[in-house]
Length: 167
Image 1 (cartoon, rainbow, N blue to C red):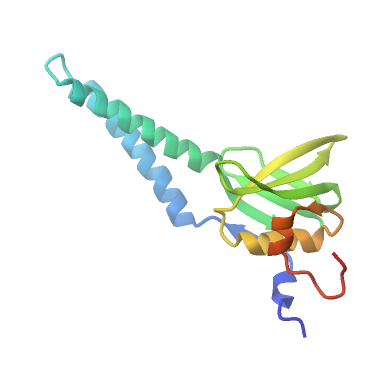
Image 2: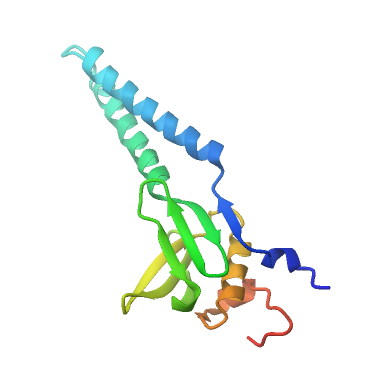
């Protein structure tokens, strides 16, 4: 009996925690509305420079949070045919397993993995952040369902290979 059998039961769906995502979106929208309210109703020529700058600073931070939550990965769906990444306000990415080429650690500021695949004859790259829930499980499913892809040393160190496969 394989201790990882439940890992390979498909389809799987991984979702970023809804409460934290929607709470951040609602708070960002409220802070933007409040900042605009303060700018148009509370500020006048007698207000200090600090009071004039603070609402713009709040709006900037709220817009940053709003954009991060709208355009970051929200859901990962895995089945026998495809790997799918879904976003709230960005085009969803669907990658058939046979089109995946390589997965490697991204060594930049944001920690994550680059997934290389082909689409319409050209090679494309998609970033998969390490902050997403159950990332090691997702990574292991990618390695299991796309055994033909190349992966770097770090990905190989995280992967659990079934005993009947040679990798």
